[in-house]
Length: 218
Ligand SMILES: Nc1ncnc2c1ncn2[C@@H]1O[C@H](COP(=O)(O)OP(=O)(O)O)[C@@H](O)[C@H]1O
Ligand SMILES: [Mg+2]
Image (cartoon, rainbow, N blue to C red; front, side):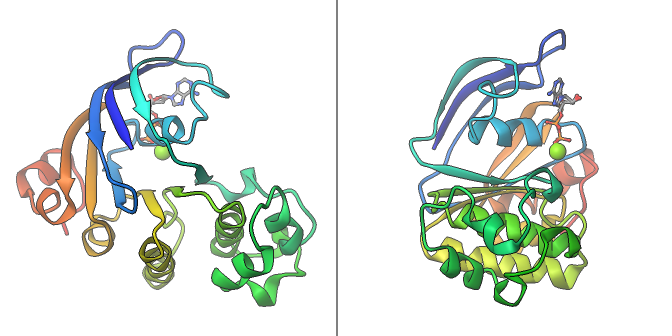
C-alpha cells in the first residue's frame, strides 16, 4: 500500500489532508492516531475507497492500494440493518459465513437481532461481516472508543490473530499503549499533516511529539 503526496479537500474547505506520503507492506498492522479533527477518519475513508467515490472531495496525489479492503465504521449502527446476526454477516459474503461468525466468537449470538446486542458485540458483528467478504486489508475506525480496557484487549487480540493469518490491519486509535503493544507501524496526524510515521516502538516513545500533540503517553 503506497500513499504518495495525498492531499484531500472537501468542497468549500481548506485541505483536510496535506501532502501525506507513506507506505506499508502487505501483512502490516498500522495504527493511525492524532487529535480530534486531524483527519484520521478521512484518511481511512480514502484507503477504503469511500472518498471520492461516495463522499465528494478533491484528491491530488496517489493512493495505490492494490488489495481488497473492508471497513468497520466507528458507529456500528451505520452498517447493521438485517434481522439476525447470521443474516447480517451473510450480507454480501463471499467466504464461509459460519466460519467468520465463529472466528469472531459470535456463534451463540447467530440468531439474535443485532439491535439487541451491546455496542462491542455490534462492532464484532460488523467485523465478522467484513471477514465474510475476505478482504486482504481490514480497516477499523476507533474500534475501542466505547470499550473498557479488558474488551479492548480482547478485540485487539482477535485482530492480532487475523494479522498473524496474513491480513493487513489498519486501526484508527486514541489508546497509544494499545498501538505500542500490538501494531508494527504507527502514523501520527497533526491537523492534516503527517507528524510521524515509522515503527510503533520508535514513534510512540517520542515523548516530545506525544506531548506536543496532546496524545496519551504510553
Ligand atoms: N464529509 C465531510 N465533508 C466536509 N468536511 C468533512 C467531512 N468529513 C470530515 N470533514 C472535516 O475534515 C476534518 C477532519 O475530520 P476527520 O477526518 O473526521 O478527523 P478525525 O477522524 O481525526 O477526527 C474536520 O474538520 C471535519 O469537519
Ligand atoms: Mg474520526
